[in-house]
Image (cartoon, rainbow, N blue to C red; front, side):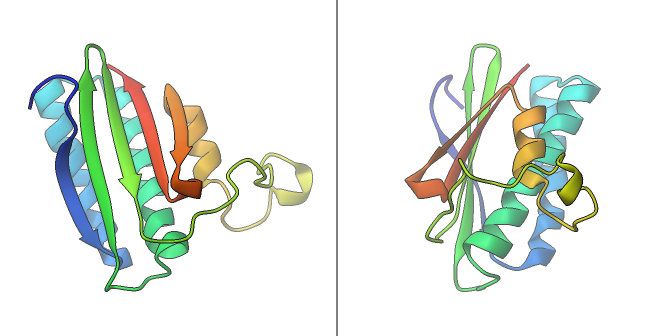
Length: 136
């Protein structure tokens, strides 16, 4: 892969069982880029959350729709982009999962975790695409 070039890496149908593919994908990244254990964990959790959200919320478990994962390496950064075929969401107005009213709710922590575990996160296409950057 050339530095700075997006390379198509994964195309998944929107079946929640496909989330299991993410760990082997991150294992390959860890080997290729000699990732530290903390970075490996941050990427694994963030990417799993992003793909899970894309399948369940973006594509609404419609197996005819796909989730695309791309990777770009730039100097000391890995950028991972996850896109779904959904309409997106209002990523600027999500409930705060650390608010006492939300602590016991099931779900609602994925984007929060992605923000905390990545070096930078950006949303595109009305929220149907997320780019997470990780310093390596």
